[in-house]
Image 1 (tube, rainbow, N blue to C red):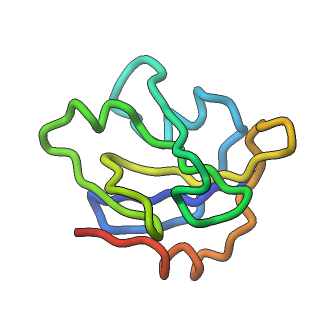
Image 2: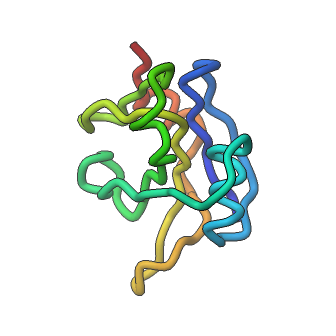
Length: 108
């Protein structure tokens, strides 16, 4: 499924493909670590309907972590992955335009 990766280390926003499993999300968010420590940010905080922002929880413990904001969300540390979700809360592909996300994301 299509996701949008926000990488504050390189100040980049790109399209990626994930299979929806936590393992595939984590490999994109934090390929250098072992273990699966991802968390989801509430969609209301991101300003987009039916879109979740998945983040690498390890960013909270990394003194070199970079940050980003999505619309009016607070600062999020580490990389972020935008995915949609269905009525059962299961991840789906993100159908936002890349340009929409570029306009909504702020890097410090």
